[in-house]
Length: 199
Image 1: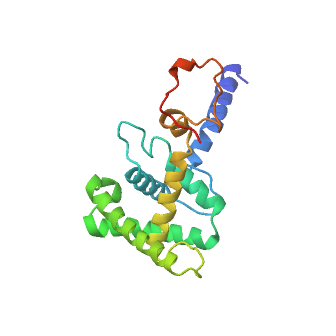
Image 2 (image 1 turned 135 degrees about the horizontal axis):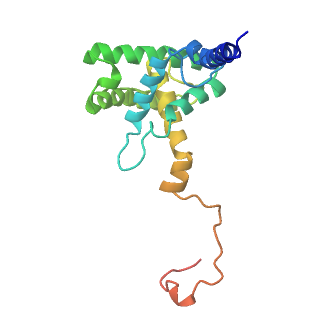
Image 3 (image 1 turned 30 degrees about the vertical axis):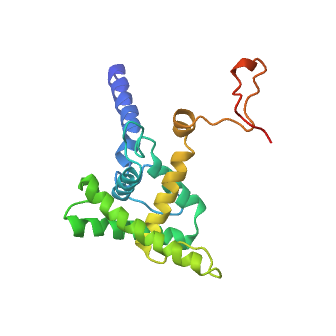
């Protein structure tokens, strides 16, 4: 047997084995491993657009910069009940279809004002739901029965929670310091403000 042919064939087999996993990758799946909910790449993109509308990029980082949609998915997958997960997934699809019906294009291609108008409408409904829930003190606190509202309530809550607890927010926006804070033994007495009254 020719040694060159063996080496050439061996290189082809090794190269094929290295490329095979990337060929088998399902491009229609979410980019994060989830155990309980099944999310497609399109649904993940839609969720990222909703999160970016809630916390848009300005002179500070937006939701997409911090991958907050992945945080929302992980939280829903790990921490929410089966009922809430079902409502979340159903609401995600309903809101996506509502955007297409209303504006004639996918949510991500809508203008910022169109996206905000749709989410503001849900925001008002959510406020009314919580107001009614507070009025009835005997009622258990639950996510709204309307799936679209449930999806929005969960997404908004987890997006804001993820943002305010992110490393970016804790180190760049509000520098978090343990209570009671540092003790500066060398602080000059002459710099104390005389008008501060104690007691």
